[in-house]
Length: 64
Image 1 (spheres, rainbow, N blue to C red):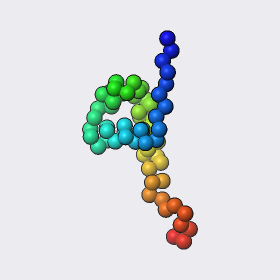
Image 2 (spheres, rainbow, N blue to C red; image 1 turned 120 degrees about the horizontal axis):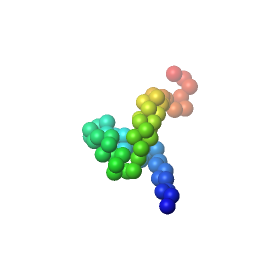
Image 3 (cartoon, rainbow, N blue to C red; image 1 turned 90 degrees about the horizontal axis):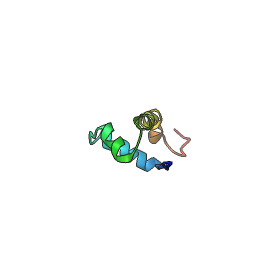
Image 4 (tube, rainbow, N blue to C red; image 1 turned 180 degrees about the horizontal axis):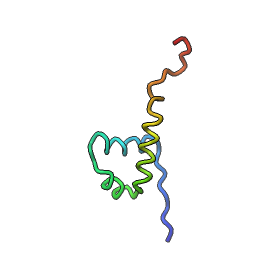
């Protein structure tokens, strides 16, 4: 029987990453609980760090 994939929203991904980064929950625990492959977790983490600067960019202001 084929396993269906869970598609996580951006908010869900951030919440999962926050549990590891701020609450110090082990990656292995999170992956076991959520049925994630560790490589997926690390890919999300990489994307967060590479795109995190976008959260601090001004939106719609061209005068600065």
